[in-house]
Length: 390
Image 1: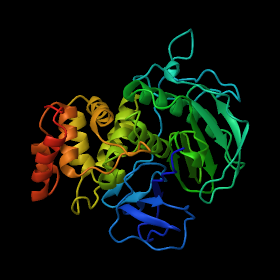
Image 2: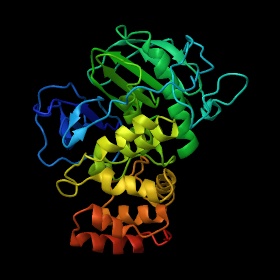
Image 3: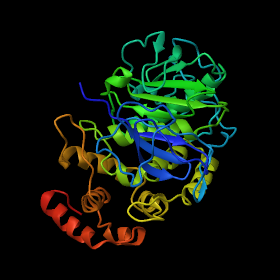
């Protein structure tokens, strides 16, 4: 069994320093922070890492939507438009009811008259247990299964408003179906969704190869109030799963140490909102995410605005990032435990250029303050991975 890997993001006040018990700070985003917990996060005490940095493997995470960030506002997801209601089918442990309202477009809303829902892409798996007792980090809540289908198994703690199920099921079913259709199969069973209200603010993800969450691909999230349309938090955590599991036979996000929450997770959310027809939400996200920077490789690096979004816009949308995961699977090394180590910048530019089918170094020189080492790293990467062409 693979050892537990943990990647965490927690939302904090802009004036509140990060403090995780037995955690090392990874990448700061003002009020959003990522950490790698070795023994568990209790959300208090402990110190902060001055330099950041993340373990080369991937794993679980924490995040809260709708809070101010350095240089902008993380969108809370807005409210879904008054489009076609997409009702989820296959509910065994509680029907999703009306299912929440999402605009048309993207995957078929479906659900009536034999129309496709996209859920045929979800693998199902053994019936989820009716109850689940948390046993990770500071979480010890008893959970009750409120719904499951082939895409998701949803568990609520005792304080969650039951009405949250309806729109969460619809959004998560469509989101995970889109993710599988785009990035390919990730695991042999549905994902597990744990929902808290009034506690454990933020959320974390865990992959299906981690015993910490009983080998279930899991997102665990908490808000004060689950308002219909609060898409940002669940979408961010799904993005973590895709980033970590997208190479299929290998695990980890080899460049996440540097782009953190300000890179692929934002791009994943923006692409997802577009695919699901949430055009107003996507437009707000584009504006908000373009103002978010981090300090890697140098202060005021706008990963989304200057790197991820231009690649998405100019080189075929999500397809380039799918290609990148495919190249990782084919060529990038992994340890005996199948987790991939951190990439240097030259390796990353080489793999991304191969994914885009064009030399992305000119874009990289605009997006990042250039260091002479990058040229040497690129030259070495071309020798080490000669089958990647562009």
